[in-house]
Image 1 (cartoon, protein in one colour):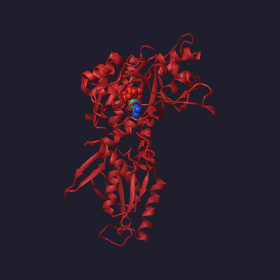
Image 2 (cartoon, protein in one colour):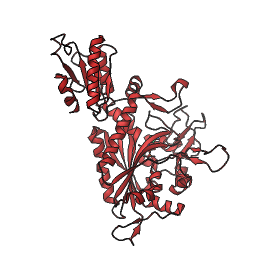
Image 3 (tube, protein in one colour):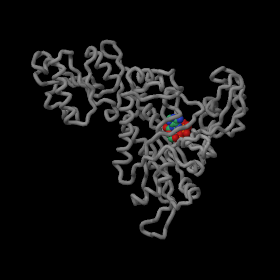
Image 4 (cartoon, protein in one colour):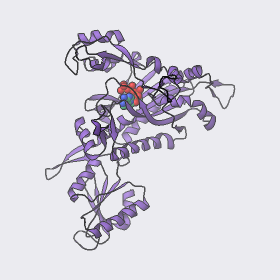
Length: 465
Ligand code: ATP
């Protein structure tokens, strides 16, 4: 059963080293988060699985890693300079600022809030008696458009030249490199370009841990098709993405698909669906799938002056702009979803409650823990030999843990989601028949708690399976 409250996971993340508040020793910086030793492993595993599924296992998709800073014309062409905005309202009493549409979501629903005009927001906040989350007043300014892009300067003189922007999505790096990719890879339609990277949005109301932050990572694909074939590709992607989350263990009752109303669609999209996850505070977007048509390529053609058409390999006279389906995953939201979904509290036969992170083993930060039963030097040396053998013969990530009682160490491994723990004891050394035969160790399974004795010779094969 997934976590019931966000606090359960936030506190486990801090306690065990998955995610720390950003800049903590300086009193923090609101809504910034740092991935700790285990969080970095978990997040890397999520990215690895994504890349493996959507790039390495496919002949029709290639990868890219484009720069965060781009020529500002990119953002003119993409429409972000003109319309990448959210409706900002101020509380007249305490001067706190909020996203007007989000304040209304609980009262009027997500769909209705998303299609409000700017001038409808203030009257509706007052009519629905929406209280300021900070001070409780119901007195709002008129909503104004607030551009979410972070502005900065390139070079040593701040006042010189145009401002540049931290990219608000990774997608535009793919469109800007479309010509480079087709010139070098010569792909045939349909084909995709995938990239994982940071994006920045000056969100008005960040919050809910890593769900909404101003710096986050995306995993995006632009999938190019012949015009007219994008509707099938859309359906295909919807199923593939759903299956990816299912295959990695997300409970299907905690996910749903939400189709955007026509009025809610972004300027570039003719159809959008979100995959939403049932977060402890309610349903929230995890992933978006949009039919962007040829909006981006035609805009970039216009603004850059470069021809971005694809030439039909069977008919060189047939040149056209491909249409695009965009599967866009939030990497941090995906990691948060795996954390929430894996969180389990189980009552044991003796009445104790154990907390276990039931990650799919492909995502667990640590694959196997080696636990010498005591701190006796010759036992640690034997455990070290076992560790070295696994290290030499596999690619597994191994934790060597000698601190605390064996019970405490099992508890720690459960809480960080390590699928297998190997205990080296005096039986292993041939000093205690009751613990086990010489050169055998115990493997403990995280989920079933089953313990089985295997010879060191068999251990590597057992761990690989
Ligand atoms: P929202 O409606 O939640 O603001 P969005 O529709 O603006 O999200 P997209 O532009 O579709 O988001 O971005 C694709 C994905 O990037 C989202 O599905 C989400 O997982 C992730 N994402 C977007 N904004 C943020 C953010 N501020 N923090 C973390 N992840 C984000």
